[in-house]
Image (cartoon, rainbow, N blue to C red; front, side):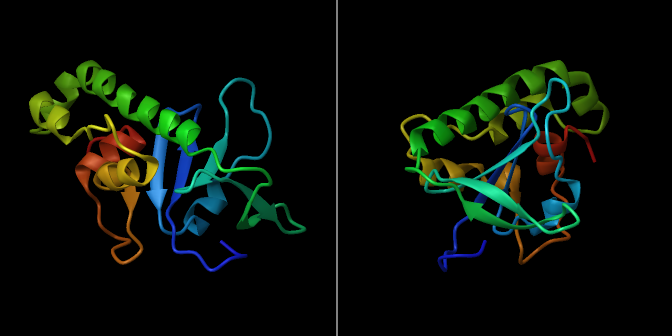
Length: 157
């Protein structure tokens, strides 16, 4: 992110809060960034951990090159509500995929224990609690956590 020198995570919501990534850099997501309305599913939205909406800056080839804070006040409660919505969907996802989980040697009970409990947390605490499930650590870009792949990508590996 350009502008102020900040070391905050970027929350990357996809598909109307059906997917989430937490990253300390969003540039890796730029090549896959969808622009515009695609007939029903929302594209990708970016927020920082203070609750500011981040808008992609595009170059002349319409490639995202940076994230800039949108105008207005931060809305940490709104972002926290969206984060809780994604986490709430995780339980349903486990129940709907119990057989698939068992086929790769993971139990639904193990999966349910991985779901972060966000009750009573502020946005920064909730982001930290969700880091394992949704995080993309810059210092370990090649780490392939099977739980992260299940939560963020809907795949079992």
